[in-house]
Image (cartoon, rainbow, N blue to C red; front, side, top):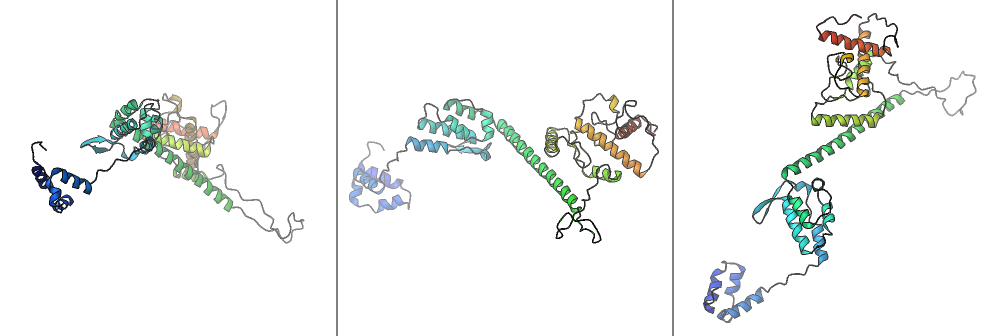
Length: 370
């Protein structure tokens, strides 16, 4: 108020400044004339009704605890908040608040910087690094982080989590499949009692039944070719596109195979993953690069992993046997070994298929002579 105003003018000015029907207006109306006579009397009555509150004293320890519990949540990354009427990204507003609190302690030796860095979301820690710095440099580094950096780090973390989940899921699925196979095998075991007419001296007490040798499941070599071909088709793994996401999914498949089967050779029950963008097995593809349609001997592309090449050869052999079983063809294989360059009948069969597809791609519809 202007110093030239009289006490009566000051009292009147306060009265007209009070909001109608507010607690202050009600209080003013109930005052005695003596309390309204002078500005000093009115001021004294005001302090009786609304005394000045003393601000609590906050110890440095309490300030430190408040600093350590002021967290930046990963779920808030990339969002905006209002600070003093201005929109700011959450990590910038957090850095401003933390710097003010650190100066208020005060942490002049920057002893708490490392502890506060550990409370940050992992994506922020990865961006700013772990170098020991001052509060000012630390907060400036956080404030300098761009939205694009945050989005890239969040996407990378999401993909890493997804890959771990995929590996765990595939490993669990493979384990369940193995457990089911063992269960089916043991269900075929039979136990019979010895014949009453047997004259042999029992090796077990009479109250126990003498077991007979279990009936084991067929080996792969004993299974019919058509059944192996059905298993090959049924258990084929999906081939992912040759993209960053597809290559990541392929790495998950390879890791799951190694976790479950180790160094075991692939077969129709445990197919080996095929590289992204390559051709399916038994499609006339080249074993060396996994792409059609040419013979492995003339392939100039990059070599496929050894396990993938082996799986493509085995699959081609299974297909050849299945076709031969459904439509018998007289085939005479003579001189396998060092004289021909083929180490097995299976490899010879697979080579015939690859050669057939190669000739067909060159316009020879009949394929090679067998």
